[in-house]
Image (cartoon, rainbow, N blue to C red):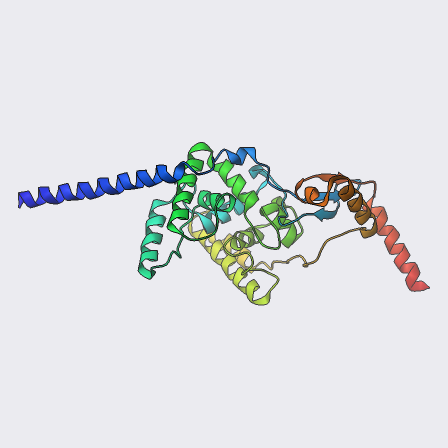
Length: 314
């Protein structure tokens, strides 16, 4: 009996060492060709160019391409939005080392049952790596690359820095990338001005921004259901009270009308054409410039109203 136990222990140790060395071999094999995580500090995220009136308070028009984005530091993002995103996407974000081993094992076992790479168990660092460097193709090789880079990213940078990059990069539908652009797109306000219900709504969009679009009736219903699920989870995990969750669930969310915003169009389009002639259209869609014009929009609004009334009288 003793010999059998010793033999079993030896066999188990051999199998364990085999998997460890196999993992290390694959780790270094794929790591040699991977991009450096330092690229996050070296690159500039594309940001839209904004044209303001003379006060700098009224946004007249926004020039953007594929990605409409305004970068905001994590200090300006409300705590309940950060908590909602953590609850929705990565509950153990502040406790793991780039990957969540338990969630990863559960996902692998689920994939093996159905023989398809469906369940990802992706942490916030993994999602950030995937959207920056890798394709969305679900293959074991891509997943391993994603894991390696996520571990390296977590090792080199603070959790808050990684979270800030993530919150400014995630796609949230309607060409809005990052929470500030999404807040402006859906609610017409800065991200630091949104309430708890709106924060949970933005967090809900991360999962599938186009399938959960508030501008389609069926999708909107699904979005609100997921928003309520996130509020309940926030209450269960102690981020908010049950009373706060129930109050936020009852609150009606007013979505901004889906249209291209352009104020004082003749003036703005004249400014836009001059800028494009000088700097090029493509450059302006990613430059992140803030253009302050000579127009006072309040005076412009009054003038337009007077002209409109005059036309109606005549």
